[in-house]
Image (cartoon, rainbow, N blue to C red; front, side, top):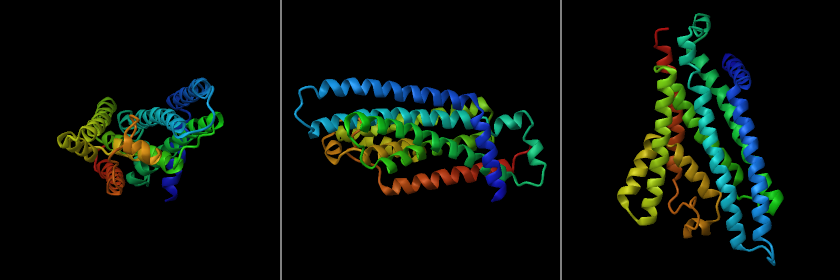
Length: 278
């Protein structure tokens, strides 16, 4: 366990020195600033002449903060893939992994340490940016997003699922091939999630089934849908007045499946890495 934590710390420091991380952080902070300025002027206009808070205003504020979190979920997934896509495959190609693998260390320790370090970095990144969006909305309008903590953690878990897939692909594929594969899998889940959403609104069972199958193949989008469902007032989900409204939200069984899916991806990555010739 100590060796895993050591590799996690080294990976976290390496990611902290990466230009990708600082670029993503800078763009994320710029997005929060842009969101805050834009939301302030929107808030000023829609509350001008208003006599008080009502349900319609809160629904509008919820829409804006959910739109901001949707962007952050996308940034989190992109950062998860870009920082991990070459973590194993790149070191294998450059033969730097041999300096570690030949020492009295188990390969599974190396992989789990790298996964843990990147997972801590991604979770911190998503929580930081999400907190900025939620706080900016509250400071300007007084609207506090319901169930913010579990919702943000589900968004972070979405990124961890893609991180696990990227680590798995990196044990067998080249960096470029792995990146293409993981991005396409994310795109599959993204499109399937929206197909299921439209199918639910149109009462089309075939479209709903397509979305469910895509969620089983890659449950990343299902985690966002679950987060969106709990962070919106029940009336918005029932009436479907927002593009983020979930008339049928993923069940707790899907959440349990996603945990098993992520754990199995890391387990398969460890097995593949341990049985690969370096």
